[in-house]
Image 1: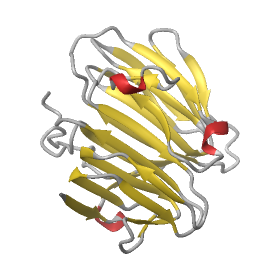
Image 2 (image 1 turned 90 degrees about the vertical axis):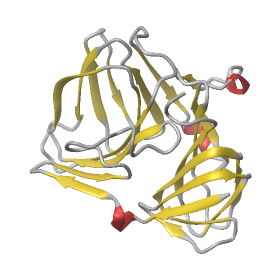
Image 3 (image 1 turned 90 degrees about the horizontal axis):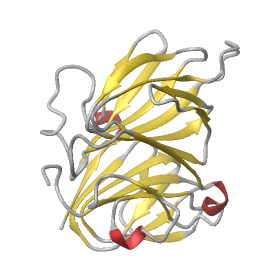
Image 4 (image 1 turned 30 degrees about the vertical axis):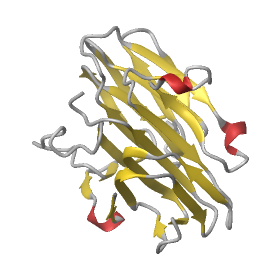
Length: 244
């Protein structure tokens, strides 16, 4: 078993006039996404987008793209007719498959200063050339308990839940918002990626990790997470590497 801490300060950083991007895996520029992957996770960006700004229409292929809003709202539009606004508590999912064009922008067009903070995650699919798809999953009520919620999964064990089904049968995304002092359990996995989106948590009673930090685990047993303060975490449970 190994646990590697990737501190917030060590993330790849990219910015322009309206976007600040903290990247757990380098994603901006000429980088080998798969060479830098952990498990099947190849992109994990924590982005802040200014009001009225965003990415114009661009294309993706053969990638599972998941969007989790921390502050504000993101407006999504794609070439298959999906048009919606995502807010905190609702997961957005897009299967790029054989090809899809989309735009994503800060839904606040009033230029009132309301920023968008969003975590976007890319997972390699288990098959290329699939039909593009889109889904969203509101887990606002389920998160209130502080216990982990499976928000997206391709694993057979989660087929009976209402989680978004992704095209990777080896991966599942868990989100939790534990309150200060609350202890929660996360499942064992050959590969794990635990990201602290807010607050501060201690994992297996080790030194606390704080906002922007990530733990990458290999061959780990179950994880016990204790919230030092009110927190929000995202945990990828992965049972194979990206090249499956």
